Length: 141
Length: 444
Image (cartoon, rainbow over all chains, first blue to last red; front, side, top):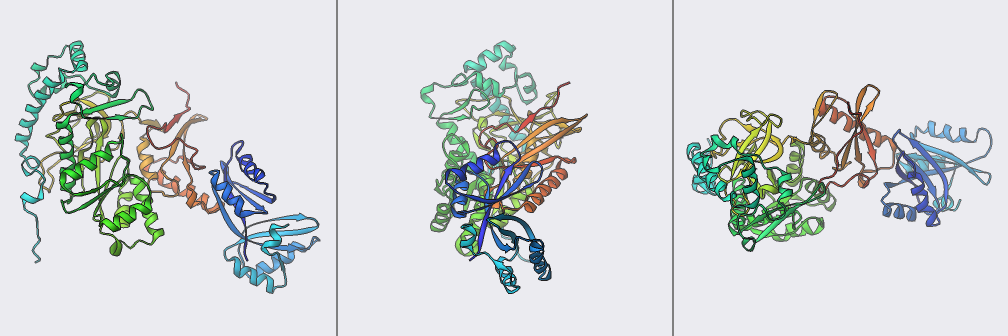
């Protein structure tokens, strides 16, 4: 099963980000990781949360521009060269990473990537011996 | 050679005598109706006072060449005379009024007696018949009713023509499609932004134009739209699209309309006296040159308006129309004379921006133009709302969208404005008279 994070459009003006986090906080939704891409007057905020379905629904209701995006989450050993091992496989398989971020949680390092074909990428990465996190594992992080 | 089947004059025109009347006869009719209208106007409280103060003696106005002696009527006058000072009949004989939004000031009203409503419905029937509508057609009216003159106006015109008229109203696209299928709708009327929305609903619902629908004509009006939008709607609906021009002060739609040539809108000169004037000097502009449209009602009893400044900019198209109608044609409305601003030496009408944005479904048609000083230069930013259904969650497509709109605006305005994407529903709504231009520039 494919997991997803939620992507939100935000104007670059005071109070926009806290409008979004406010909606999530009120619904008791936990944000595991966040990435902000800034394009000057507006940007895109990607959030890995423990309940993306509810988060998506509530944000949409609140009038926020939001879109779910499929991801692949790879568990990386928290040691020098851990990330490099993953990227080597991606390069070898010619997988184009559209966006990525990483975080460390309870001595587990996780790399989250967006690719064009998630299902195919998961098969390729698994075959290369990498440890992928299941949907349940990701949301339960 | 195939023999072209052509309707003869009897069935080609709604009112053959009026529509193809030789110009000299048409002018004689106008002269006669102008005098009657002026005498009638003098019985209203407002015109009596206005003409007394201006020293106008209406009996001295013999013909069209004397028109320039008469003062103009403006929106402000209508506000001052609100609600009933323009009436030339007893209020008891008024059978309907339409009020325009009062968001930028006092509201205005236009009142009708039975004659006026019949005359207005007949003009709209004439417009629709001209485009090919016939009594056997099924007409689905997809605009709002109520005070919006496009709703009841088209409704009554369609009934006058004898079509099966479906007062569907605006919105609820699924139901619109069901009506179209169940009733065999052949003609629709919608505002352009709704027509574009309907196209995407068609796509989603998998509607097959040939199999499921019998559409042949669509009337789009009340909002500006580009030729590009017309083509998109024509392809998407499999129907011919005709431009419509009207304004609430002149009753609503039915003032001018496109014929099958789709090249300019015939303005009905038996009902409206047309002037195109330089908005600054108020001197008449020659045919083919742009100016402000000034209209006088010639067939309205309850509330005639004399030399009403529409603020709409257009030009009279020179030459006769191949369709055989002798009434002049006006070009697509360029903008409003009171909206224009100058930036980087270029005259810009907000309508140019609006028309262009209509063809970008990703941003809808709400927009705002911000003018600022940027050092010694002026800068213009166009703020547009990204629509929910087009947000894919990535920054690349936003950037591409921004660049595409910037390039399109540059092509239209000949300088490069900034484009800012903003969240949906964060700009003033398109309904009514939203503030579209915010000028923060230092005044000299």
